[in-house]
Length: 412
Picture 1 (cartoon, rainbow, N blue to C red):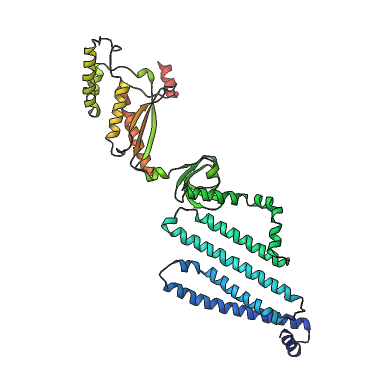
Picture 2: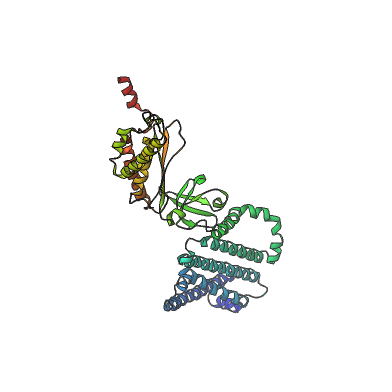
């Protein structure tokens, strides 16, 4: 058939054999483009109409414009593959080359369709509630890598005219190179399985990874990396396997709990700590939050000292309240009566080990507001109050001397 068409060109259009071959090639190319355009138009016309009639969205996502173009190209390539033997004589040197090229294009387009399908699967599953936060992207990336590898092996086997088994038989010799090239992918895949199985990280989690300077929300989980949007709006890319090999903090537990922890200390000058005399107790008893405590504690101490015949003229003898102890009770009662503190969770004020910076007095409680801005505002209000009332208990805060302290000392 090809010879007859060529002879017709030679007898009617040109006497040059090269020109006839060129005209023949151009004609075939135009015919192929027309066939491809017709297939594309038909698919673009009917597939969206069919998918629009269904109630589900997955078919709309799968049969997108990229897939439709790939299917049209695949149909065209199949047609070319079928008609090539009829267009060239068997002795033509171009025949095996064109068949190999057509087969390679079929494999390439098939890989294109499969990877588009995996992208659609990733998009569909990511929208489902039960899969939100799961590393679906890692699995689809692995599937695409395997598809690329299989497609590459098949195309290479066609080009060198060897079976895929021949190529795979020599795979052991280059295993070390493949492991080196795909090291991150292999480690990432194993890490993704562990992260998913143990539910360690999800999209939307607030994580802190000190070794990589990441502190923010996870917004993408891939096969080889996890992307974190930091609170300063920078983006940190952390290798997936780092979440297995290194330590990190996931704040999801706090976000799902009833409160966000407050754990902050103030430092009291040790030389301002003393026993409470009657004048101090009378002043403290006027404070509403500890009035009942002072009365009850004073009665209990007086009874103890009386029964044990303690000489109370010296405060060191017997039992006595201290200003730091009364201040500690005041802070606890203040927290118990603060509406921003979760009353169902632990509330504690404790002394830490004294040091050269004074006696640390730590507040340990949980704030109802977990949102960062509200949380910081509530904590600031609490410590504004605590710092303001310290002097009322005849206590002083410890701080390193500054320029004004030295000037006051010189002026004295």
